[in-house]
Length: 235
Image 1: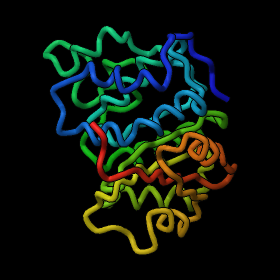
Image 2: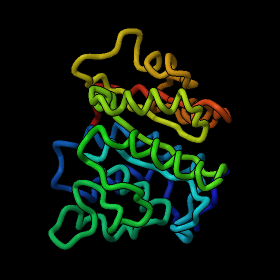
Image 3: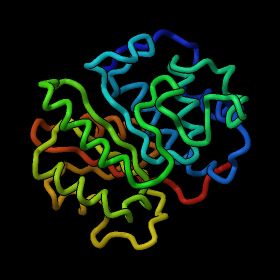
Image 4: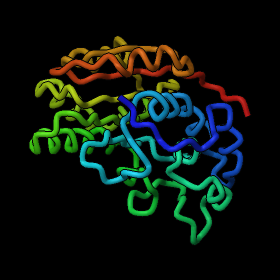
């Protein structure tokens, strides 16, 4: 169940105009836009989060491991009431809290500092285990990674452990724009399925398909959703 955030007047159609307010990191514009639809579906329809209750111990945790090019993330946070949209034009400035990599200390609603690729899934595993140890069985932990991040070995240790330990509150979303250096025999979803994860591969721009996949949780099996996006992005 999603906790309804206070109305902001912004919807999905406003996200790209909000992103256009942020300049200076154009080299990562595709990295940002490739995540846009997944982020919107998560924050609009799936995650139980509330900008008025940032420290709620029973909130869902969203970890953006694909932290380079966070413009889409900031736009969604602004649209959902976590940020003042007036802050967006100051993205990347010296005294702005909106850096080129998200900072959990500075930005409301950000759970981890990220940008150095390959760490988010292991952190998400730790968060899920911590919540389990506390007896909190309601919050979900959702980690968004890029397909190229899976070249980093620590991800596969996390995939292995989460599957074997049945962390049903952990979800990994892999935004697949076919940028991995090596790829995976059988595809990305197969890599997770072999370790016991429930898996879905969907069109990363299809909101209905994303929602259906992201809500197919199981109590004793983690969930992996591969969101395939185009390799060339419109400006």
